[in-house]
Image (cartoon, rainbow, N blue to C red; front, side):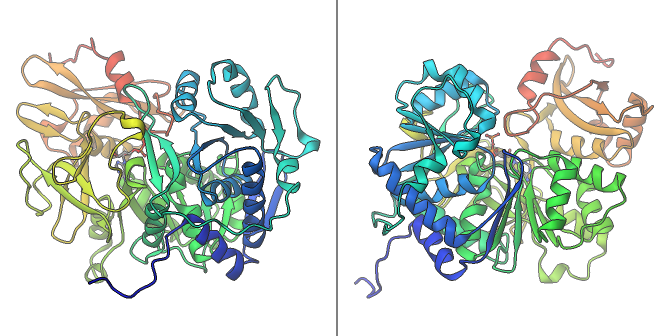
Length: 542
Ligand code: ADP
């Protein structure tokens, strides 16, 4: 027997319709590519998203068509998020930091019909346009006054396109499983693979982002989304903000400490979200200029492990709570979020940090387990570690066009490629990416642990740890680090520092200093490149 409850589809358009009607005056503030700060609100975003849907319909875009974006975080990008998904098309956010040949590959793989591009990336598309197979037109996200001279063909001005319409448009109703957006993983090996989200999965994920034990987004928030809208939908923040009527602050292209800090203060930001590298820069700026955060009460750190020293600095020096979160493009992306439990309230500060450096607790909606070598489930005791597998209504079930083949096991679990532990309270701790872990004499050494500890050593700005072949132990850890300019820190200083926290067998065999470390398009350490560069490195212990 079925329940007698209305069967309304969970559609992305309902989010912006809700905030347009009920939080109409709440601001969306953007630092524009053209220069000035721009202010709009949910009423206008909803209206202009409808105008865009009307315009795209006239251009021939239909349900399921892919519409690409190459853009920073800004209000026009938000209009495209809601306009494109709202009309039943697929918003394909493209990471401009990918290699140009990868961008051409994914535009063709996705069969993008139109591309929307920020002024910054016009030259990038000019260089690639001959390779595009299905693109019918390119919309430049600016007004007539700022339209550039360009060799791009079939160019349309965004403002002219949108403002030609009336916005007298009712969001269409369709199956909630209809695809809504597409995001390719950066693919450190092989071609990028597309994760295709649905309207339903996006709305359910938004409930989770708004839940108190998720990221707790509410109408009281002013959110600075530093995490790019081309990276796992800015961790779902634009949708969750619309669901709750939270103010959005979008930093555009300016990701330096001074620009971010200025927005945080001017727009009374209460919640921010980004990867550790960004916060490293911001904290450096704030410390150097002896500043404080006057309104920010929490920050979400994810994408890579948040170093202990960073969590301590935010909490102890600046009174900003840290939500350490884990997820991946394939998980929409929220998998776990790091809030403390009631029973932790009276713990000594140091022990609270021990909990916070874990990647967070399971939130309702994501099932997670760890398995051993033969696929057997391992205990949730916080000690046993194994392959992390996930399942749930916002977890991918396969890549776009079947790339990568079958990705779920017989019981529907997706293997994340991460290795970690789960404790009895549901806190998950990543030990490593399965391919980064260092296998030494039958024991596993977590590259993340060693990196985290190395970052706590005075004079070290960034550190990567990789496995180097060793005749006796199979593999041994090598630290590759970047020093603070002019700092005298030496190899021995780093190893001495690590002796405080690591067991002797976990200590790196050597430390090498470099000017900079390679990163992926999503800002993570590119260890495949390091492994390649150091494959013939002779450790002093061999
Ligand atoms: P990419 O395209 O680089 O794979 P994703 O955002 O999908 O981008 O990357 C997901 C991976 O990032 C995870 O599988 C995990 O290895 C890593 N990751 C994400 N958050 C954390 C975190 N808080 N701590 C450690 N690793 C993390």
